[in-house]
Image: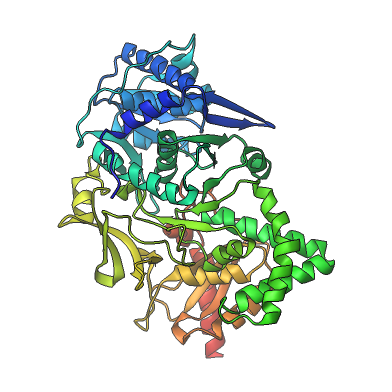
Length: 558
């Protein structure tokens, strides 16, 4: 198990000193990369530390950090941690009333805001809230000259951050992570990236579009600041493709929804192009998915070889010339999508974990990726299956508890094992597969248990134009699907007929509801990091679901 002889904050500080003249962090703004060198970032951190002390903040105080990804966000985060202040990062796109609830819960001494609009929204939602300071107030004036003081000493049990969970059901909870959690995890992520990148003298180029207030995104940020890297932030999600080409990354972190969208986009563009290129792609794709590599005949290998020469390189060029891998986490990725990118020559490395596990439990080994699995447990972390095949985790990555919620902490931390709430399985190679959330299991009136996520993924894959699929059926005699997106009824009927033919009777989906609007953060049906609020979805569309079951019952009586 890798280890560092110093705490992670000191590692980052010394790394930035070592990279004083090298770009370490940047923003993609339009067609230009705006970067800061290690010495400049340390100067911003020193400047912010001075202002925080002047504002009366002391080690152990809590400070909320609300803003979009930026150079200043990172400098503020590093400054707070260097001063021993507990950082409470908040999602800038979250509704103001939800943010106000989190602020009431953690009672920070100060709220740092990226801009005046965010500060105003909080002031309206929480008039009695903490004092507010804008980033521009934290960083105005000349940068502090070096040399810069190292972080203040802290003990392993001292909290570093309180990260609020997404709250798929109930109110979000504040997950406390301490020095020991970070001191363990960052060497682990460093070691895995060393395996991916090998021995290089040049810096890693890392593109980053996911908000840094989420645990996995933040861990990648801290890992990049700990190694020879240049991390480049997206500033316009509408221009991701252009930003990626400009950033020319070696790797970047993704959520499954984006990779699914990229896959559908590639297939749609080739279908629109038509002609020999589209025919060649279809034949090569059929050869790839039709049999494993050991069973492919000469014809299959010929089509794949031709596509690998004439088509796939052009697709890869959209990601720039340096791409080594795409990293994917936050939710299970459809195995077909992982294999699709593998066909193109782009490895997809999966990571599994929760905020409570310092974001990570497993990581794919770049040398032995098994599609559909999320890799082996990180060395030093124990994982086993509990009741109902729930994944249990134990190790230095496990959080000490939820903020001000001892009962919730006791419910998930039992006998030193963290109960993840995820259902999974592990194979003989030690690779883990995530099947879904235990609490999402649908128990039919027949007594059969059905994990909805694999069926939802399969139906979504079969429905071109669909955006989301949610299964219902708890306590019912069969399953019904809610489907969003530009989909016609006959499409769904055909997809279900083909899919049900290969399923046991209790897993067959025998009804569906077409939902006109997608599930979004704005309409309250997705969490801040894009996970389904299943209970909210079921409540919103309860009448339509009930009508579907009633029609089936009436048809059966007739």
